[in-house]
Amino acid sequence: MAKRVVVEETKPKTKAPAAPAPPPLGRLVWLWVAAWAVPGLGHYLLRRKWRALILFACIVAMFGFGLAMKGQFFSTGTGSYLESLGYFGEMCVGLAMPVAQFFGYSGGDPFFASADYGTAFLVAAGMLNVLAILDVHDIALGRKP
Amino acid sequence: MTRFFKSLNRPITQSPDKKMAIPHFIAMLLFSFLVSVVFAVLSKASPRDQFIYGAKVFVGFVGVAVILGWLMYFLPR
Image (cartoon, rainbow over all chains, first blue to last red; front, side):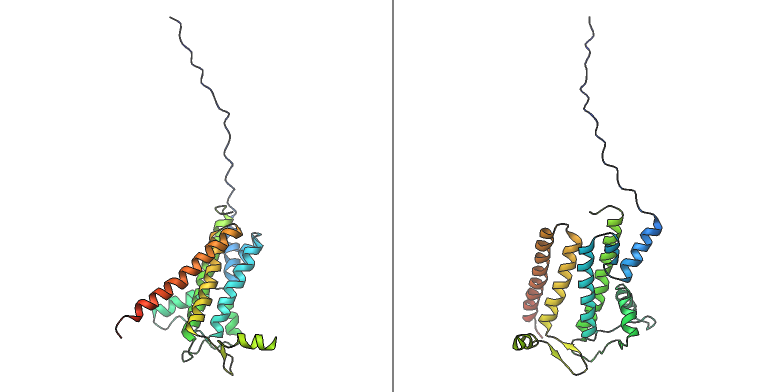
């Protein structure tokens, strides 16, 4: 009895595009620091100029409104965990906080009517910058376009 | 032209030592707008998708705030 030979159709194999190589750790750290120091700078270094400009404008505007409304600058060492968290939240906005203190921002006026909103604006600016830093990380690793 | 720009200053009062006292609702609108823009830019890729998503987030922020405000209105003091 003749053997039946089955010839399987082989489809030409197309190779999946190779994942981009992750950048060196030094470059990643540099991007994180740049993105922290100046909102949008990390995106600018990754050549996302419009995204960098919009993030810079929004985060700095939010910080500026917080200063204008006499929001409070928190500090560590007060014994309050919430104040320490607020300090780290505000520090996440980058160099803007030390620059504001250098140019004489007194740290807020708790008796001013809009001061609570100002504090919220300051901390929210820091938190938005954290999102921007994470976005820079994802773009650098090729996870986002 | 001068009267137009002066009219923009009406809801925002500026005290002599340059503080910005704004009504609660304006502060909420400002906050929602800035956060919505950042969320939209970070979440979506194309400008059209960013605009639509940002508008949805903004409306969501303001809508939830208004709803919560009305819910709290009926709570006993």
